[in-house]
Every structure is written in structure tokens, then in C-alpha cells.
Length: 520
Image 1 (cartoon, rainbow, N blue to C red):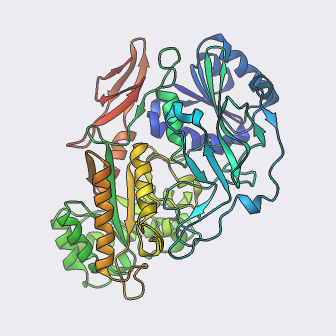
Image 2 (tube, rainbow, N blue to C red; image 1 turned 135 degrees about the vertical axis):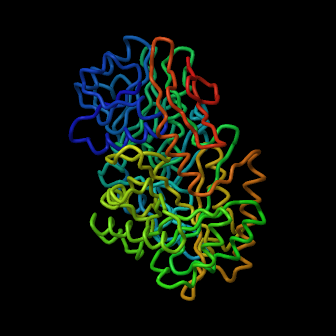
Image 3 (spheres, rainbow, N blue to C red; image 1 turned 60 degrees about the horizontal axis):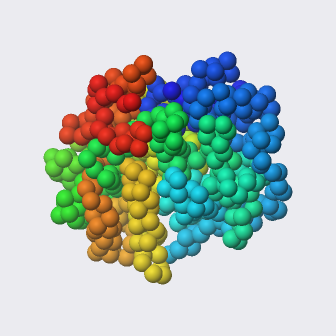
């Protein structure tokens, strides 16, 4: 069991961290806890501990082998024994924390970067790098799929200008190649270990979350408590991939790319903007697509920015879209794709109340709480409703003008493969108005073919899933029940979709997970 501690002013950050942990280890193994619950905890997460809490944690760490994850500020009651120094903030955050918009045929990144040290090799993170902010299209998309680390005092920002000892630092904020302060560090306290991220929510919106998972599941597995981490990749596969077209303005023009995907034996899904169904122009193609087993999702009724700006508008968008798609295709959609990838909290609430089972979105420009390192249930929403971030946009607009045009897309997939993330990417059908940077269909199909060839070369046993299969798997994964007893942690429920199975990582062993599995 992981116990999460935070004062009431940090309730929002706490709720996001609790949800992120549950997406990794299962709902029942994470508990927001009052301070009196600390003596019972063997693994704890604490956000912005104050002086009194720091003293309590210091004593708790020395009582027996334990694990502690700290997010955000460090009180002097922990800074002093950990020998962490206060340094100066780098001047002019505007010059290092923010990125210019991406040019056509290129990308743009902030001068400030997070750089992982060799010591992070203990968590297979040595050599990791990421910009605080980056764009691959205008000031909207980051195709490498992580969120922005801010310098504005928010819960998404660096917390304090602190420098950990050389032998404790795992990652630094570097500006123009010079390390300026510590972003991530690990400390030892007696027989216990402490992992600290200098950000109130830690890396919940980044591939770096994998470091947290490895700390929880494997670190000091012979001497310290561990918590099982449930794989986002179905058991028996080393990679899982899903791809879709967001049909903003046209639907039938998806036919050539769909044909190419069928030749490659890779599923392609369609997210339907249902205003395109005002006449029967697209009905024949959609019915053919559905009869061939194609997956259909909602892309709202009117593609309104921010789902129309209110809960009521989002509820109407979801319900109207489902009704139109049902009338045209006979399919009752279960999942939605956010217009412009904007996923404000009221829109997600509207989708819940419209009886959707989940939403796909995620973009660095807005709604940072929907950039999820792992797919699954969301903070503040009912169980059973899930989210999945898919921020990799395979567009002609994002093809690099120099070198390998697909270099960023390949890097995005390679990182997803490395950290066992369910990888989602997207494109759009052509329309009369806009072709998304592609010169013609032949160029687009060639790029998609080469990208899939890269995936098949990189992975040994990749699983290509349509969006419904992917979201159904995530929903089933979120419903897994694992409970602790004297014999170990026992899985009481794990019903994977037909043909798939769950995997779990625990004490350096990766194994299948099913009802009755005991993890000791």
C-alpha cells in the first residue's frame, strides 16, 4: 500500500498524484492518508512537507526499511540531514523556461533542459533528456508527448532552487549546458530510500514517470518494501500501438490510407466529427469501414473549441454526436476524442454524464492535468471513466525538413517502447480546405508505411490495436483489484479483454497477472 500525504492547500496536486499512482499500481494500493496514518505506512508519498512533517518523516525513515517519495519543496528538517543547499534561481525565466513556436519543417525547445546523470542508470534513466517546453507544430503539439515544466510557482513548476550533493543527484536543470539546480535526487536514510522530484506533481505528465515505477516496484527489492506495477502493454508483447484519423472536415478521403493500413495488417480507427454526417455522402464508406471491423469514436458534434465552453455544452456535444453516428452507422460510440485535444474538467464531466466510457486527448498547450504518463482513471471523476494521452501527431506539417523527416516520430515511439507505454499517434483525412502539410496522398502513405516499418523493426512482438481495443484494455486494467494480506499481495480481479492478458512487474520479476495471482 502506498500512503499519500499532503496538506489541504496541496489538495489539487495530491489528487493528481494519487490518480497517477493508481494508474500504475491499481486503485486499491494507493490511499490518501491523514498524518496519523504514517506509522502504518511502509511506502509513502509526501507533497510539500513542512518542518514538522519533515521531522516526522526523518524519524519514520529510521525506524525500519521504508520508501519515501517527495514531490516539491524540502523543509530544512530534511534539507539539512540530506545536505541539500539553497542556491539562486537562474535569472530571467522567460529566457530559459519557454520555447518559441515550432517552424514548419522543424521543432523548437526551451533553453532550459532536464538532464539525467549516470547515477540514474540504477533506474535505466541515464542519458535521458527533455526540454522544459518543446513544440513540433506552432505552439501546440509536442510529438515527444511530455508536458511542460514551468517556472511560475504553479503545481507544474520547479519548486525551489536547491542543489543536492553530487553523489545523490539523478537529474539537473541545465541551461546552455550548465547544471543550475537539482530536479531529481535520491537519498539514503538509515535502511530506507528517498526519491525526490523538485516539482509538486513530480513527473506525472512525462516518460520520466517510469523512474517512479521502477523505484516502487524494483528498487532494493531484497531489503525494502516494493509495490507491484501493472504493465500498460498486454502480456506476451513488448509494444502496443494504436493509430487513428480525426475526421474534422472529411471522412471518405480516409479511404486510401485505410487501404494502405489494411495491406500492412494494421488497424486504423476513425474519430467522427458528426456535423460531417448532415447528409449521406460518407455513409457508404462508414458502413464499409464498420463491416470490416473498423473502430469508430466520437470527435464531438461541432468540433467546438473547449467543448463549447461549459459542462452543458460538452454534455450536448457528446450526446448529439453519439446520436448522429448511431443513425448513420448503427454504432453506439463509447469513447470520445477531444477537439483540438482540449480536455477541460467540465468537458470530461459532461462526457461521464453522457455515458461515455473514456476520452482521448492530451496536448502541451492546455489542460496539463490531461497529459498522462499512463492511461487510466482520472482525478475527480467516477471509476470506470478513463483517459489516454496521445500527443504524437503524424502530419506533413511536422515532418523535418533536414535529415530523416521521421526522426522525431521514431524517437517518440522508441521512448514509448523503452518505458512500455501504450503508444498512440494520429493523423487527419484530407479535406478541400486543408491537407495538414502533406503534398499528396502518396507522400502521406509512404511516411506512414516507413513509420510502421520502423516500429516492426524496433519491437520483437508489437501489438497493433484499434482505439476501442486499446481503451477497453485500459478500462479493464484500471479495474484490477490487488489487496495485501499476510501472504503477500493477491490479485482478486483481473479480467482482461478476450485474447489479451495483463502483466505485472514486482521485485525485478515480470510475470502474467490473473485472478488468484499472489505477489510475494
